[in-house]
Structures are given as C-alpha cells and as structure tokens.
Length: 366
Image 1 (tube, rainbow, N blue to C red):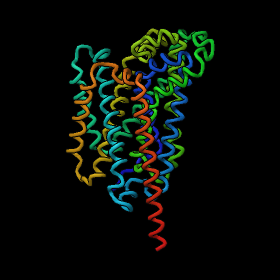
Image 2: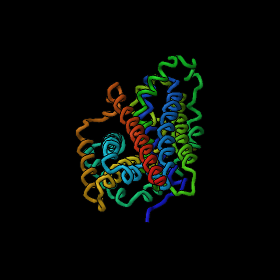
Image 3: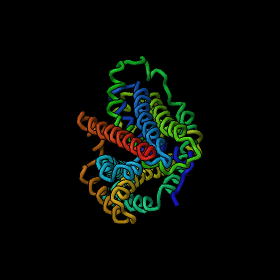
Image 4: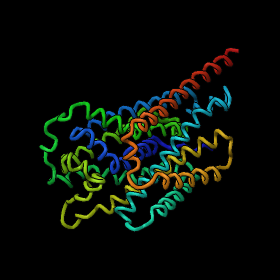
C-alpha cells in the first residue's frame, strides 16, 4: 500500500528543506552582493522556487495518481523517462554530496572541532541511508518534529536580539541599487531550485488535500522566514560586518538573550539545525534512490541506496575543504548549469506528460 502524507507533513518537509540549512550557509553570499537589501533577493529567489514547485504540481495534477513519470513510462515507454531521471537523480546526488560537505565543515569547525570531517560525513550518511530506506513518512514526521520548535525560535528571535537591532544599519534603502539584489538572487537560484524535490513528494501526498495550497505554504513560508533572518542579520551586525563573518546566521543565534537564566539557548538551536540539515540530506538521497529504482524497475532498494549513499560521501570529500559550495557559487557556469538542469527537468517532464496525455486520449477515443 502506498504511503500517504498529510498536507501539513508535506509542507513541513518543504519548509525544512528550503530554510534550515540556508539560514546558516546562504546569508553571507547574499550580503556580499546585495548589502542591506539582501532580504529582497531572498524574496526573488522564493518566487523562482514557487514557480518550479507549482509548475511541478500542475503537471502532476494532470494525472489521477499525481505521478507523471509513471504515466510517461506506461504510455510511451521507460526510455522516455531516462533523460528526466538522469538529470533529476544527478542533481539530487550533487545536492546530497554538497550538503554533506557543508554540514561536515560547519560541525567540525564550530561544534566538534578536531573531529575528522569524513567521520562526521560517514555518520550522517549512515543515518540518511537508513531513514531513506524507511520511506517518505518517517522523513516527513521528523521534519514536522523539527519545524514546531523552530517556529517557536523564529517567533521569539526578534525579541531575543531586540537590544542589538539598529534601524540605521539598513539605511539608505537600495544603496547598491537593484543590480545588487538581482546579482544576489542569481547567485542563490541553485538553492531555490531545490523545490524540484516536489516531484518525489507529490505522489505521496494525500489525494484529499489541495497540493497547490500546501506547496505555496511550504515554499513561501520557508523563503519568508529566510528573508526575515537575513534582515535581522543586517539590522543587528550591519551588512558589511555580516558579509565578513563565516556564518552570520550562527552568530545571530549566539546572541539571543531573554533573561540571565536562559541566555545560552544556542545549543538547542544547533541541535534543531543539525536535525533539519539531516532531513535535507536524507530527502535528496531518498529522491535519487526512489526515482532511480523506479526507472530501473528495482523492487529492493538496499543496494542502490548503499551505492548512492557511499558515492555521496566520497564526493563530499572530493569537493575539498569548507565553503566549497560558497566558492562555486561565484562562478557563472555553476549557476547557469544548475538553472539549466532544473529547467530541463521541468521542460522534459512537461513535454513527456503532454505526449502521455495525448496517447491516453487517443486510446480512450479508440
């Protein structure tokens, strides 16, 4: 029996995937290019993420079971899905390995200094492989468990750093002009394209809920929360200082203070961040495993999970030291390549779905 998840669990996965890792790793890149208007660039990348996510939902809803890849396989043939699967699995494997590299670097530098990065990467990969084998429901329920306390943290964050906020830090408005905002948005589009994961989630969503509403809630809320965090970083540290910090998001959570008895709550927030990052890692592995195994007709997924999981660990070490994704994000070919793959998956899926619908219609008429 196919596992179905509720709209709330579906949105929770999208929020955690699109927000948790980004709030630590992305602000510096945005602040370097857009200055105090970096929060505006988050809203623009959110619009791109919504375009990708809602377009996938629209394509999936053309079929009763919301599974366009299955429809293409059944009506045209498995070969028609191979280009889509190759690009989709490759992009998820790349995101999986880069996320492992990011989290192992962050953890070995700030949380567990002296621990070999490959040990951390291997431990996270083992957890990701085990969870991916259990299916989408444990991933979604864990995401919901991370999201609820994270919402509480975000709601209280402005009050926790209120004493440090200086409104003049973001004056004058549009000091770098719209060119800086657009440049920062362009740099962050590979992150925004992670909403492509909707393709692997939509088939598991309960048919009784509206996928458009919950996709809008998930992707929209994630980028709204990220924009607020980036704005708070600018108001507290100034854009210039924050753009020179390794992890401005980490520094923001470090200065939260309500009373003398609960000044140091950063440890709890870091636990939530690690759990959310593991969900991000696991989800990309799950998507690669599920689509790859369905394309190959594999009933048992243990071997493909092991192969892709280990490949991601190896790639995470091949990428090199810390901030590798941040360095790659400065290259136009890296950004353009990501966007090309994301749009190619969307275009090929739309074309294949259109052809499948035509064949289904022809078969019905006959």
